[in-house]
Length: 328
Image (cartoon, rainbow, N blue to C red; front, side, top):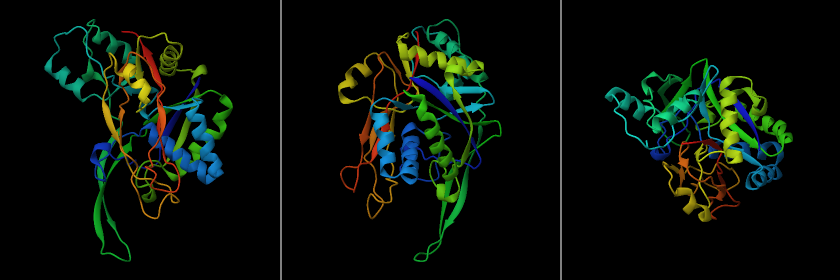
């Protein structure tokens, strides 16, 4: 598998709803999951290439020729990864302020991942309080909905605005490098339209700051990322950290949860297709393993039809993982 890193520079604020908040617009998060990205790219493929475009990308993903990670923050040249779900094998005395900082920490620089692993082994205390996680500002924007049929209705939208030196990146795994130019075109189109919620209000627009072949990585964080991805690919690890909010197939579930530490997140949302039904319908709800979940055995995951057979065509949710390989 060939891995590419896409760095996004947001030109407008981003609205991504919290999965546990249901239909509420006034909550939000800083990043988006791989299933959101994959659905948005399929929507772009439909616009650019027609139905055959969607079929092409879905088939590639189903056949393990294409993989996506969730989106994670970067700041300057520093790449951040999700804090692993893990339990220390040796308990150390940790000052209350560091314990509190560790509980709040969601992402850590990839360069600090060895220190985090060492802390799980009881070799050191991880200084979570010293991690810079200032990527931008979360805020709530008040708006008014005006239609010809109804009275004006106020509502609020939770948005995240990145600092100038920060943004999001995600990883794409391609079996064939020749796919990358076509994928770049779709991602650029998506940047113009926007990703996340309320794109019709101008949110979620970005430009592609860089597309980096990790096989030719130049800076230290990119080389570290490439190394962890390679360890997972060739099996030189005894633990696998998922970078994708993902779900094993039924026949994989038993092995996946054995000796694993993980979080679960709810994945729902509305079908965005204009041809699916005459009125907005919700996708089927599923619970996925959160990014940062740590497994003893890797799994393939799946592409799931979440339409419930209520509309005119299938609706797919992406659930195949990208793993980092580490040794405990």
